[in-house]
Structure formats: structure tokens, C-alpha cells
Amino acid sequence: MSFQTVLIRGTGLLGASIGLGLRAAGKAVWLSDPSGTAMRIAEDIGAGSPWPADEHPDLVVVAAPPEATAEEVHLALVQHPEAIVVDIASVKGSILEELHQIQEGLDLSRYVGTHPMAGRERSGPVAARGALFTSMPWVICPHETAEASAVAEAEELARLLGASLHRMGPAEHDESVALISHLPQVAASLVASRLQDAPGNALELSGNGLRDVTRIAASDPNLWVQILTHNASAVLEILYGLSEDVSRLIGTLESPRAPGGQADIAQLIAEGNAGVARIPGKHGTPPQAFTVVTVIVDDRPGQIAAVLNDVAEAGVNVEDMRMDHSAGHQVGMVELSVLPGRAEELAQALTHIGWKVVLT
Image (cartoon, rainbow, N blue to C red; front, top):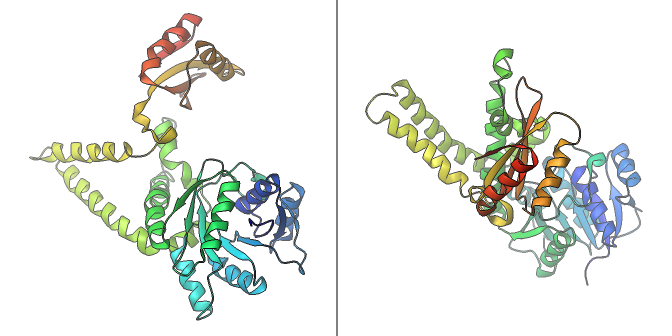
């Protein structure tokens, strides 16, 4: 039988969001958190009720920071000898190693490491959303001694919350997130750090390119100290390769007109083109499969809604959308990604209505 009662240890953004989602699915949810304030907020928003200490849940979800996860998993296994225990930390291998160090011979058959790849730029239970995990990847990382029934319950948790299931070993997971999550964070922080002493006149010229590259640099330093420490070896391996590429570029730019210099620069950009083409877009489709229709709008209320309404009237589906503002002008640009075969049709329809349109 699927679990019916769940104890969530940790009521931050993810823990509270899991509580909201599980309660919507009809599960009984109990909450526990060292921070009484965080737990009361999570309770107030409907994520669950305080854990009655004499009750034993079917499933324990450890939603603690990486540095506390192993100890919390160990405690849950001891306190609830019949429960399945999962964690949702963003690293897996080091937590498994810590569990073995905490107690040699610890029975981990009821434990499964997992990692929901979801979040928001805001943190804490006040930012929680029950639909946070809908269609987002949720990685299940069973270790060698995990029982099949425990793995099935971990998958059921992700399925109930609407996530997209993926299964990896702990080492494969850590190597994967080092590349697609931890490296981008390091790169964004390094680029953003160059802006600390940048002239104001230069920053006034910044557009979406700089914002896109540095957006995640606003992340919580305390959390990332833990993540990078726990996954240091996997991140380091990638940084060695990145360092070699940077050194190669530096050497080229020291004499950019030397024989082969132009080809080296072109090769670097081409390799980036090839890499970005492999990033899945909507429904797994590469972003390059869409054409961008840019609509110029006045910077006043109702303009974006009006554009989208007119697009709907034209009968064209928007695959993706982003916005930018024109520096020094009271106008914005709404970039609509559509299927190439519909781009010209949409551009003509919007132009006929009176919108200023650029097709790229």
C-alpha cells in the first residue's frame, strides 16, 4: 500500500511545498523543524500540522540543509523503525558516506536519496507552492541495499507531486548536477563578482545577456557553501576542464591576429553553439527549433495582456516568452517563441492590428 501519513523534517521552501502538495493529494502530513517560526508559518499556510511525538508515520521526508541531512536521516531511521525515509538534498554520495560513518553497519534498506530539481528565487515556507514540482525533474537515487518497496514509495512521492521521474545512482547524480547546476552557479557568481567595482555608466548599458548570465548569482551563500563542499570532487573535475578552455582563450586573445587565432575564437563560440543546442526546451525540443517574434510595447499597464490576447486571437501558440526593457526609453520588448511555420503569420497579424513587430 502507498503511504498515508508523512512526517516532513524541515519546513523551508521545499519541505513546505511538499506538505502542501501531499495534503492536496489527501495525505496526512506532520511537520517538524528546529525553527518554531518556520514551522508555524508552514502550518498557517496549510502544509501540515505539528508532529505528535508519539505517532509514527509511514514516510519521513528529510528536507534539511545538506550539512544536517545525514544526521536527520539517521535519527528518522532510529525513531521510526517501520517508516520509509527519503531525503531531498541536492547532493547524494557524500550523505550516503556520512550515514555509514555515523553508524557502521546501519541498516539503510528503508532509506532512499532523492533530489527534486525545483525551487524559486524566494526561500522559506512563505514562498511555498503545492504545484512547485509539477513537470519538474525529480531524481530517485537508490543505493545498493535499498529495498524495492522503499524505492517504490520514493517514486510514489514524486509522482503524487506531479514531478517527472528520473533514476540515477548517487555518483551519477552528483556528476550530473555538478555540470548542469553547480557549474552554472559558480560561473554566474564569478561573472557577477566582476561587477562589484564596475562603473555605473557601464552597468546602465546592461541588457538581458548580463541578466541571464548573472541571475542565479543572487543565491544564498550559506547553502552554496554546503553544496559545493559536499560535491567538491565532481565540481572540481569540471572546473579543471573549464580552466583549460579559459587558459586557451587567454593565450589566443594575447595575440588574436596570430596565425590560427581567429579560428580558435570561432571554434570556442561554435563549441558553445553545439552545447546550448543540446539543452532541452519545451517538450524536450531544442530552443533553436522556435522562431522569435519580438513585439514592441509601451511601458504602461495592460500592454502584455493585450499582446497575449491578440496572439490568442491569431490562433498561434506561444512556446516560450521573455521580456526586456529598452535602456533610456519607456518601451519594452516581448519576445514570443513560436513554431517557425507560424512566425510570419503571427507577425503579419500583429502588425495589421497595429503592433510594432520584429521577426528574428
